Length: 79
Image (cartoon, rainbow, N blue to C red; front, side, top):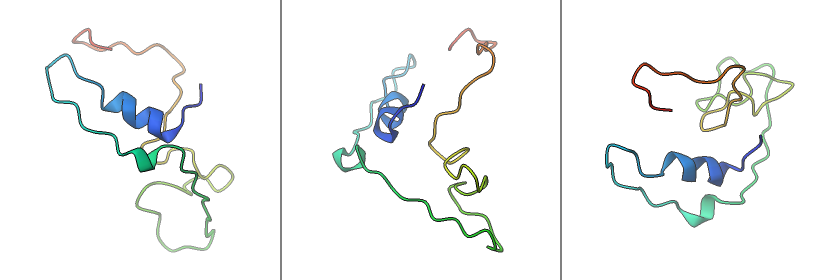
């Protein structure tokens, strides 16, 4: 399942069972598409994790959805 960045952030910002307040989602984030230009010869990695995989620069990037190979199971029963 592929989600837009704004959908991911909205899901993260949903009210938690602990009663934490909901943070506002800036409208200008939704729908933005950013072109990632990777430098294969860079001495350092990017701060957001983009370009760690030069063939798929968005994979593993901060705030990106990751698919699971198995269902998540946590000790506290939350999911």
